[in-house]
Length: 137
Image (cartoon, rainbow, N blue to C red; front, side):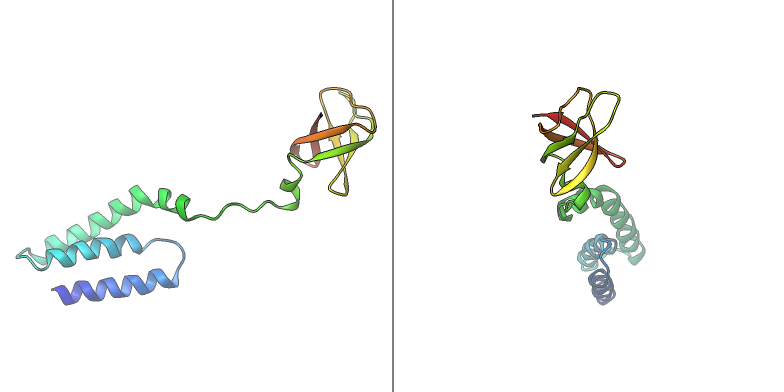
């Protein structure tokens, strides 16, 4: 029966190489276990049950942690990039009246919970919709 498990391992390995979803790799590992079991006098149906159950258990228990480990760091877009940067107030910002901030060479509508006069330096805390939430530096 070990030829069968070798074929399963090869087929699933080629499927995994052809995809990027990390699905069949768990069944490759369980097929390796079944391959080892095929060298002992264990019936094929037991080997198959172990193959299926172990593959599913590995998929459920380790997939998310491995995906986090393998995932690339998120690259900031132009929008995300300005968070944490400093800008200059070009129009006065008051609590109930949005103003304007120039940051990274672009002008943005900005709001703050305090009044900030024109010409002051601000730090961009976050973005809500198309408005920057800023605080004075």
